[in-house]
Amino acid sequence: MLNKFGPSGHGEAQVQYLDGDFRVISPGTYVRCAVTDARIPLDELKYWSVDLQEPYAVPSAVAPLAFRNRTISFSVVTSVNASRFASAIKAAISRSENG
Image 1 (cartoon, helix red, strand yellow):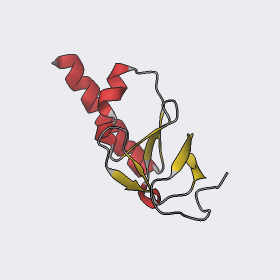
Image 2 (cartoon, helix red, strand yellow):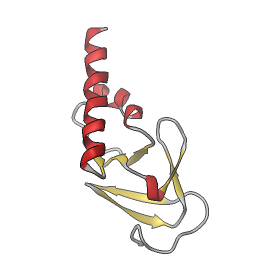
Image 3 (cartoon, one colour):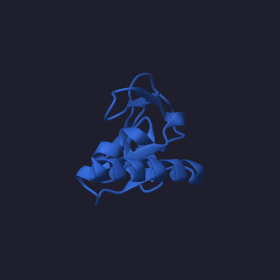
């Protein structure tokens, strides 16, 4: 296994998503968002689900999952992003409950 700072390959990486970190299993330069299918460069990867082992390009991509199963835990890399992430999830849950 490689860590996230190991040698990089070209193409899509295989990643194990951990709580607050991730481990590169197979080298690559990006992963694909589980919701939007957008390419996420590994050095820009900030949002993922440990439980589902899925990466997300932006916090709002996670919103539909959050109110489908509220027991899923999600990881973010920085506290600034965590605040934006939490706000996006709360807003999406509120919209789903009110409409």
